Image 1 (cartoon, rainbow, N blue to C red):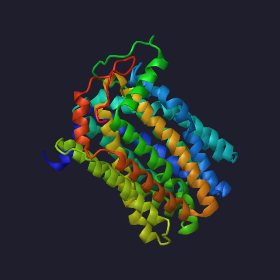
Image 2: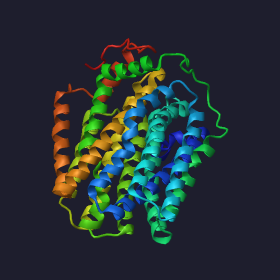
Image 3: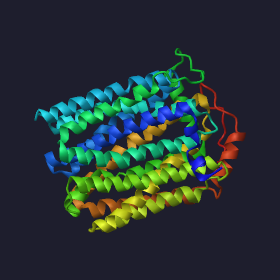
Length: 431
């Protein structure tokens, strides 16, 4: 099988092609909103702290709602739910666009709308992650997860460029209206999609007991526990560096809207290639993921962010941002695949809900921390100090792990007894 066929193997499935296209267009709208929102907040306030605060409050609903979203994902028709949730983002972005065009927008409006969109996405993300298994089955799951990450980063590359072009040509208001229209693409993609029937947990089951079963599964499996811990560490200390990217562009590099979009696009390009690299490895089906690969991506990304803290030249910043994007998404796509390939189908939604919970808890905390440190001590301390701290903490985690490859852990997971619907019947396969 050629490299191209391995990398894009999941796209041979017609249902996945439709889902993939709708997801990319929806994410394109998401990135247009994120880019314009960050510029709007900094233009209104000039505050690096508020850049972090707005980002944090937009993700606060993830802490409360994402575990519940995971339970819902195991109890309902995922396709129908994924057709309903985008309505919230469409309405929220349309309202924000109208507020900007009418001259009435305030930071409070931006925060409230970001929180509303965040609440919708807190439920949508675990459902969408679990839905991939419904579309492609187990054989192509890792490849499809990596391609989802690649599609996300196609939008991440193109979205800022489109957003910057609309920002310069039409102003901020129309950008939010375009984002609203693109958010509705998922609804059209899923209309009439035919999928194999799956078993849904009885609606009368105790949702809190089902949620506890998800927590018990993560707690009882060393690999899943370790991967989520690494995920949390990277979000807390380093990979929220993009929160203060508008300030880095405007204050350190003296760039305007188009320059800011260039920086964001370069990160997205690196992230895209990182995701495609993971997809190619997953499509081959012959290359086990070893722990030095996972930790290597974490540490290499941290070193890039550390170096960025000292950069004052755009031509040095661009390759570092590219490599940081590659390492960040390479790790995240790999980690998501490692978790999903071992979780039982009956618990998939709940474990993905806890994955989203980890993101929703640590990303806003890291964003707020990054903004406060940058405002108080400067961008250099925020980026370089955070990167050093992440390396130290992740090294402690690495040294505490037994010298086994992740492939060995996979084999142990397959031999272990599976979790029941009501709770764990598992021993720790790697402990």
